[in-house]
Image 1 (cartoon, rainbow, N blue to C red):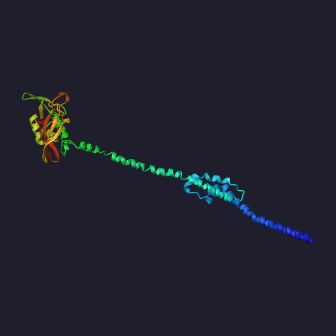
Image 2: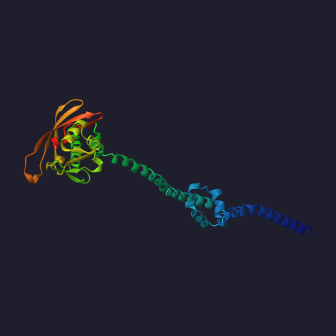
Image 3: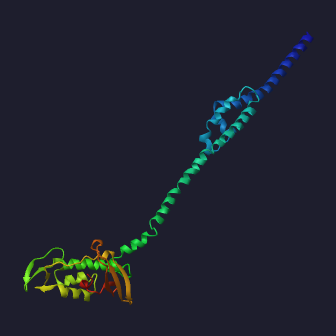
Length: 292
């Protein structure tokens, strides 16, 4: 009986020791299982603890944690394998630089808008454009610089005003007989001496304008009239060239070479035109009928 009691005591002690050993060993076995389970059940919870992914690449690398379940959770080395697989998965994260180049391309496109705006300014003022624009923008009746080129537009303006006056204005006025000759009144806009002189002095000096009016117009009852006839010639002053003959600060003379129409086969005419500076602007000091 004593032997049996001792044996049973030894068995109970051995059993307790084995249970204690088993109990001590159990946490070592179960702890990894609990560590791996969250990696399988909730990849989002394990990813921040084991693999801190960059915030910028989170949207790109979300599929990467799906590779973690390939590690079995039952074996104890699973945590190391899971960690290794997680570390192996992290190289996949560098795929995030793929969107970064695309993001850097977007800002690069923005400067292209200003770059197109800048050339617009150099194109707008071309080399020849401003010179031509400056030449045509000066009114012939406000010419402050006279040379062989700007003299021609002033001559053409003077010719236009001469032809308008010599033809009676905008409309042919009432005709009448006076001293045995047929006369007609000028249109209302130039129908008086004051109006006609004011119209002519836009291109001529006052002396040249009065000389022309005194020779070709008569004043009857305060209204201007002229012989019922038309004047003019075939010379093409728009194709004329000018050469300066004399020059002072306020007076100049140019020799104009004026051609006839090509079909007439006549030699060019040489006409001297005098200019005088009145105030700030140049005027023609030759009487209109002397030139045209």
